Image (cartoon, rainbow, N blue to C red; front, side):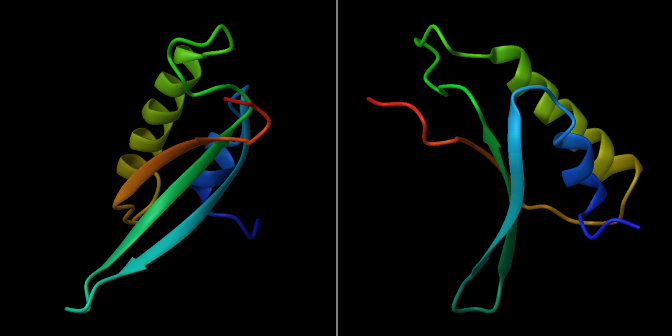
Length: 88
């Protein structure tokens, strides 16, 4: 059994994804939000020659499918971030 959530395991199989993690946010009223962060190995600027729209489509498709059909986990937000290897 893996120590990672199934949604993370499935998304990390997508070419272009470098890693995933969860971030938690808490508000004064006690509300919390679970954000699944997906790090990718390409520039997230749509004007970049290194842009990979298909990877973004696959991330969303797999996240929705896994969260709807394969787990009871609730994820409030999905965020995609570049790996930090790109310069402005």
